Amino acid sequence: MPGKTDKPLILIIDDEEPLRDGCRQVLEKSGYEVLTAEHGAEGIKIAREHMPDVAFVDLKMPNMSGMEVMEILSKDIPDIILVMITGYASILSAVEAMQKGAYDYLPKPFSPDQLRAITKRALDHRALKIEAKKLKEEKEMMEKNFITFVSHEMRSPLVVVRQYFETLKEIASDKFDKDVKEIIERCNKRLQNLEEMVEHWLDISRIGDGTFLQKKEKVNLESIMKRAIEEMTPLCQKRGITIKTEISRNLPPLMGDEESLMRVFTNLIGNATKYTPEGGAIDISIQSDNYYNTVKVADSGCGIPQDKLPFICEPFFRVKGKNEKERGSGLGLAFCKKIMESHHGRIEILSKENEGTTCILTFPADINAKNNQK
Ligand SMILES: Nc1ncnc2c1ncn2[C@@H]1O[C@H](COP(=O)(O)OP(=O)(O)OP(=O)(O)O)[C@@H](O)[C@H]1O
Ligand SMILES: [Mg+2]
Image (cartoon, rainbow, N blue to C red):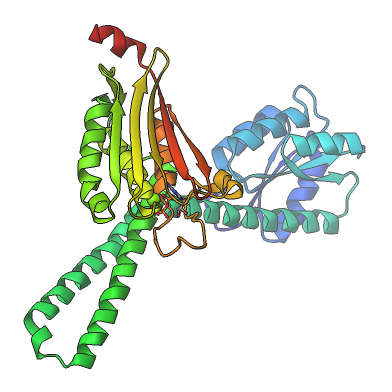
């Protein structure tokens, strides 16, 4: 049965019988399998049934034109390569044929060599097209499975190594010489770097596909901020930094993801603490009007140079220079931005070098939540 062998399958759609027979003979001799059809409708039927690799389509046929046939075939048959056969090879018809999905055209009359050459080219082109498609699909698949790949292939073995490592330290560290202990400590540092890197990769892909934002429910900005401040207070105290808050009464609830917002707030307070010299101050306020709920976190720290401000929320962007000793991953603000966007809100950063930075979060007010509250 045609189409069942390994031979490439070629379909000739042309209303001239001698041409069909001639093509069949030439192509069969070259080792291809050949099907023929004498008009467009028959050609489409045969193509749908046998899925040919290449179809030669005569431009001028009664009833249905070659252009129409090619348009249908290019949509219906994946990976088919179409070649237009034409009696009058005008540039215009060739261009139109290409637009309808043709790969090339063959002007009549043509020699067996020309037919063989164009068939081979079409088949090579098909093989390349399929290869490229396969690679693209593989790449998409890899991107899609990136999180799973990183967590299974890298994080899981790392967890095991960490457990063994901790056990080793516990049961044997007092037996080690000083220099062995030093090596073990270096291993520990490297392992820690690797663990952090894997977590960051995971975070980055979560930023990309939004999977870190789990649920939306009624949340209260004041209580989330209080939690965030509580969590950050030990760090602030350690650095002698004071936090002042000004939160307006009766803030309306809004729809959001508490844990993501907690992450935004702790990130901003964390930055304010990290980039503010000892003894500095952080002012936090939450205001609400009919249109917006606005959260501000302002510090009296080193500030951000004006020319760096536009990039500050890009993943991995960090300001190099005197405050670089405060190493971070450069992901905090990228998360904040992504999380704010998924709350239909935004983040704005105002800053002046050596004076301080103010991060402003705006959430659109939920009119319904406000009315329900009254
Ligand atoms: N309040 C701030 N004052 C001064 N510089 C800031 C402030 N907030 C952010 N920056 C600058 O912006 C950069 C990016 O901040 P971001 O929070 O994204 O990353 P990070 O703090 O370096 O690392 P991470 O938050 O991932 O631990 C910081 O490295 C810092 O240079
Ligand atoms: Mg940060």
